[in-house]
Length: 283
Image (cartoon, rainbow, N blue to C red; front, side, top):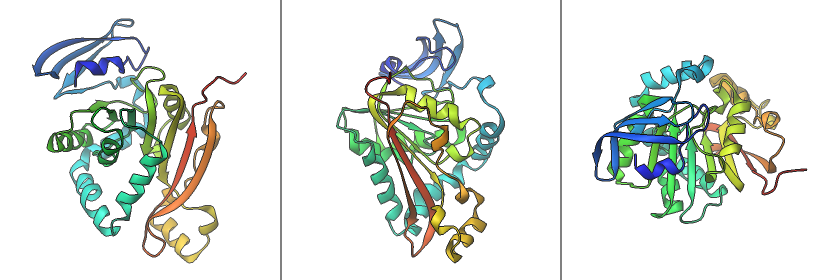
């Protein structure tokens, strides 16, 4: 991590400012050390350049079970997401991610957050969008997949991507920090979806767009032969966009449905829920 990241990071519990105590660094990159909250005095470890901003008390239920699952399958998940799915989708999976990133409406130089980044599948599209002067923060609950995202960042020599270990329902970022917030895959299984969505809104700047994508088959297609087959393959395809769990103060809400790669070769039906943080608080 770079010391400049402290301008965005904060304590996930009390949102207090963090103070860095570096132990090992390479140039401007902090490889190991501690981040200590000036308010509550909680200390967070930095290892291999990645701050661990996941307090044990905020990890429970489904979040903990899925974290352990992704830790176990990190290698196979990386191979699937970066090799098999792009190939089997005939190139339409990368195109879908490109479109989801474009919904954010980011400009060069923007600061953006990728929630549940996994092995970093969204990062190439975000880097292309914000350019060299932009800044990308990417977090995940699983150490296993973060290690693969870190390998990707090093291989691509991206100097404007910052990784953190954290929980989506307890984000370690200051209020109104980001020009856009992206989340692809995961919210269907979050332990506290309502709180996670509230956190996404909190860290977005006024007027910034939040884009949430996850598995879900369009209701009108669920009773078709293909729809019944898909639902039998994966029960999560019956998931609905969590519209009813959104905070009241959102604007410009929209929901779209799709399938990767196409209707002819159904692999991953999904929904795209996007909304904005209002520029002004509602009266």
